[in-house]
Length: 133
Image (cartoon, helix red, strand yellow):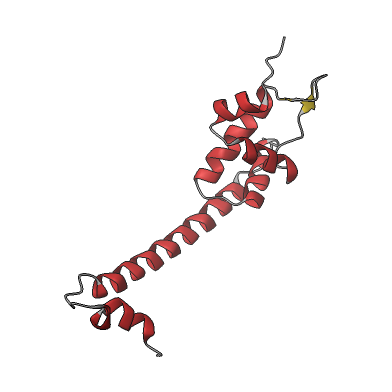
């Protein structure tokens, strides 16, 4: 007999919020669950595996569409890995761009931090935000 899980059990096992599971079903990332006679959703082990795959992909920052593509690749093991490699390299480039942006923001904030002015009138951050250049 195959194990079946309620949406709450699946949520706990996969480490994903119940509303997230419903959303993944709505956007066709997770197939709709079968229903028990009482109308409750019933999930199987494949749903748990797929949901765990999705969660790990999201933790790595892949978009829903990218995860959809990765799931397609995962279900076609005969296909070349080049598509996954291309997606990974593009994702790394995006992350590196975000890191550069965050470092730039950190430098800018460090320049205005620790304001010694006694009042908001002398606040370095407020002056920096009010500049028109």
